[in-house]
Length: 158
Image (cartoon, rainbow, N blue to C red; front, side):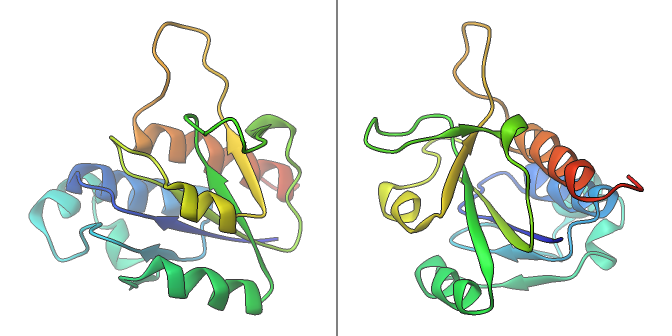
């Protein structure tokens, strides 16, 4: 399985750096930084990425509306990770999804998550079940949970 990720509209550069570092550890093949997500070189990214931004392939792609159809044409299944979906969207727990082929994970803004427009373009919407009072996790933590779980499920050597 080939796994890439799209951090979209991530405002915190520390979260972006953490996502680079996690992508390196989990074997994510590439990051597409979209919307207003910050990109290297930035001191805050370097501080949390600890150099991973030099090893993980990445590309700045400002318009996610152009990127998603391009990735679909390349054979990627578009997987949105979102906890605060409109009821019209069916979600699936991340720990029940078995990835195959090419997978692109999209993670959204710390405050607003992913827009309905993006969710409509997704092939599947995954969520992380929450047991406490809070409705969501920090985006870089959610990224780590899902990236490692899908990597583990797709790679017997992991």
